[in-house]
Image 1: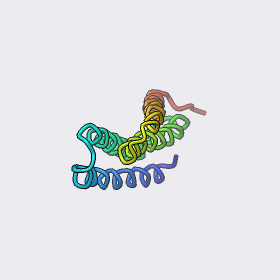
Image 2 (image 1 turned 90 degrees about the vertical axis):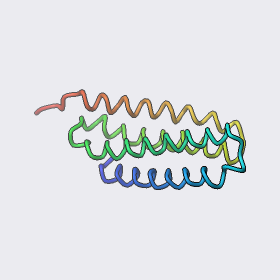
Image 3 (image 1 turned 120 degrees about the horizontal axis):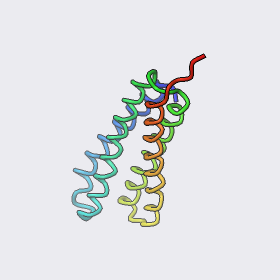
Image 4 (image 1 turned 60 degrees about the vertical axis):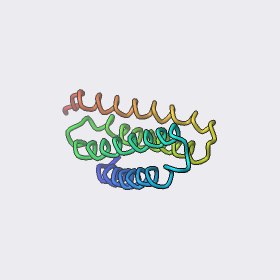
Length: 127
């Protein structure tokens, strides 16, 4: 992913993460039980952390091996969307089968950070 797209995606994730956090703290506090509220806060935390991670990835992209970096951005973005938004849907709908999507997002997040690690530790090919 191009650094500008990563930056834009990060900003959207962060903006929505702040809104989701406020919504959970104010609107959901009296509607869902404490366990579901904890699930909501986990989703917000992961969304904000990975939004910042995407922003950092956009900043350091020129320093990293390009091939892995191009794969890492989409993996992290899709992983964040699947992880956090499946948890949001779980809390809002109380439809438990939605929870099977969450680990897929988690695996994509792990893979994305693994790709960043490879990109950071790999030497660029010289001509």
